[in-house]
Length: 278
Image (cartoon, rainbow, N blue to C red; front, side):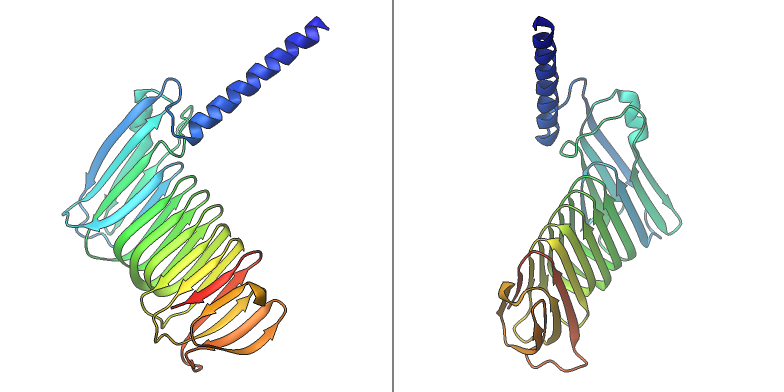
C-alpha cells in the first residue's frame, strides 16, 4: 500500500510538471534555460519579384514600407543555447528570388507565442509571395502581389488590403480575415471562421469551412452569382438577393440581378453560418 501511494505521488508530480510546462508554452512564458533571440538581417532585393517565407513555429508579419532593402527581424525566446541562433534564421536573395526560412535544428525547442518574425519589403509590385508557418499567426499588410499564397497549420491569418490576380489562404486551426480584397480567391479554414470584405467584385470567390462561420461583405452595387452548400436556416442575407434554386443543404441565387457574366461565389459550411451583407 505504501509503495502504491509513492507511485501515485510520483505520477501526480509528473502530471503537475507537464501542466506547468504546457501553460508556460501557451502563454509565452520563457522556458527553463531559455535564450533571448534578437536577430536582424537585411537583403538587397533590387531584382526580386518572388518571395518565399517559411517558419516552423513563429508569428509572421509582412508589410510593404518605404525601405530600400528587405529587413528581417526575429525576436523572442528559445530553449537552447546561443550556438542554436546561427542555425535558426536564413535569408537568401539570389537573382529574382528572396527566401526567408526558419530552420528547426536538433535539440531546439520553440514555443509558438515566443517568436516574432517581422519583415519589411520595399513597397512595389511582386509577382509571387508565399507565407507559411506550422504554428503561429500570419499578418500581411498593404502588399502588391499577383499571386499570394498563405498557410497556417495552427494560427490565424489576417490580410489587410490585397489586390492581385490569385489569392489562396489555408488554416487548419484558426480564423481567416481578409480586408479590402480584390482577387480571384480560394479560402479554406478547417476549424475557424472566415471573414472577407471585398473591395471590388468581379472575380471568383470560394470560401469553405468545416467548423466555423463565413461572412462576406460586398459593396452596395456589387453583382454576383452565389452558390452555397449550407442549411437555409443558417443563412443571413442583408443585400438584394433573389433565390433561383433551393433544397435542404444547397442554395443558389443572384445578387443585385446579376447576369451569367458576373462574378461567382461558392460558399460551403459544414456546421456554421453563412452571412452575406453590404
